Amino acid sequence: MLNNLSSPKSTRKSKIIGRGMGSGVGGHTTGRGLSGATARTGYQYPRRTFEGGQNPLSRRLPRYRGDVRGITRAFFTAGQRNMPIKLSSVAELAEKLSKTEITLQDLVQAGVVSLRYNKIMKPKILLDKEITTKIIIKGIPTSKSAKAAIEKAGGSIEE
Image: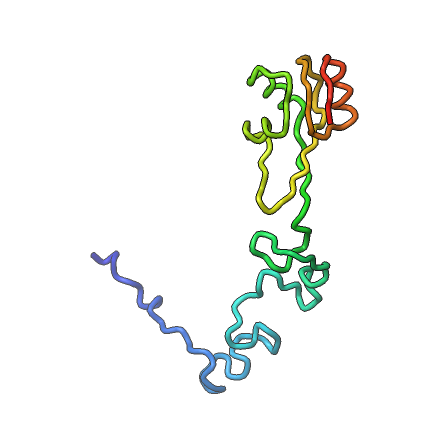
């Protein structure tokens, strides 16, 4: 019962700031320092893009035309986007579908490549490891090393 009672020392009222010079606390600057943004009313913390008064990055970079994901001031073009595809995943897909001929539609249906409505995707097959399955690639750009690996396995590339 006695342990629930609060100490008389902890019930002391805190001093109210900003009520004149005779209030005992902060008559002039009221604990906010001399001047600047933090001394002004309504200031809590700087916005996310604030860089201390210098010209922010969002204003230093060039703007591009077009609407990118709802942002009218885009920092990159809304057009092309490169999409690397691993040669090993293409070989696994060929084995899974039991096909030797692989096209871009096969990659899209399998979920290896996702075509977005507002981007022009540029898929390219890159070498990550050697393959043993024979594959014929139709209409998908490939790197020189991936082309050599496909031809070494007995496959070919058709544009």
